[in-house]
Image (cartoon, rainbow, N blue to C red; front, side, top):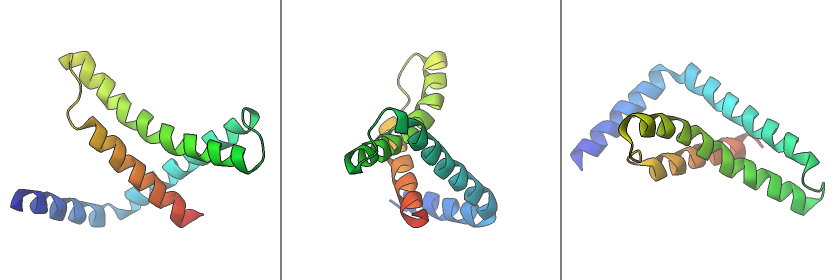
Length: 104
C-alpha cells in the first residue's frame, strides 16, 4: 500500500513539473474527440440520439485506440496480452471524460 502511495506522489510531482506538456496532451485528446465526433456526423442522424451516439462512440473509441497501440507492440514482442490493459483503458477513459466535461 505504501508503494502505491509513493507512485502516486511521484506521478503528482511529474505532472506538476510537466504541466504544460500535460495541457497540450489534453488539448490533443479533446481535438481528437471533436474531430472523430464531427466525422461521424455523416453516419449518424443530427438529432439528440445521433449526437449522443456520436459522443459516446468517440468517448469509447479514443481510449481504446490509444491503449491498444502500445498493447499491439507489446504483443508483437512478447506474444501475450499486455498486463493492466483494462486499467489503462479505464484510466484513459476517465481522463478523457473529465477533460470533455471541463471543456464543455
